[in-house]
Image (cartoon, rainbow, N blue to C red; front, side, top):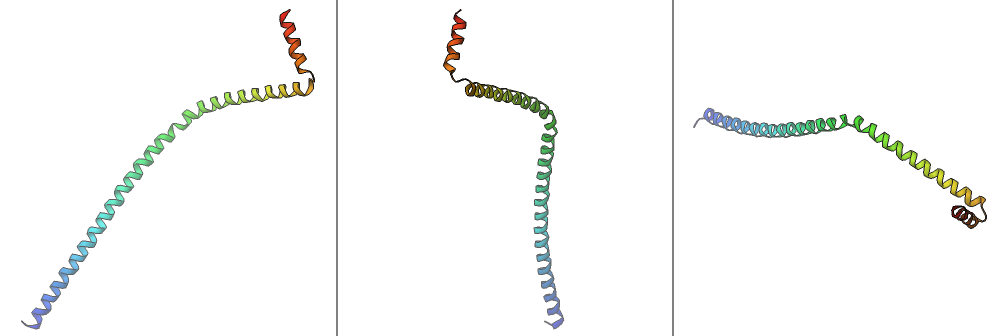
Length: 108
């Protein structure tokens, strides 16, 4: 075989190896791109679901504020009642007398 034919064969083999490596790398790039696309689609779907859920927040916020207002009124009433009890205890040295006096008024 002549040197020219050997060079052609070597260059063809090198070309086939390069084409194979390029094909492999392109295949890997394609697989990675598909994974990225799938992941981006999942993120997009979850983002839309989250946005859909956050749309309803103002609807529930009104009811939450109403319930919180009722809880606050009840808490203020409880604090006021406990302050009244504390004042009575501090100002009444004979608290049993108050109990007896109220029971005598109830009997009459």
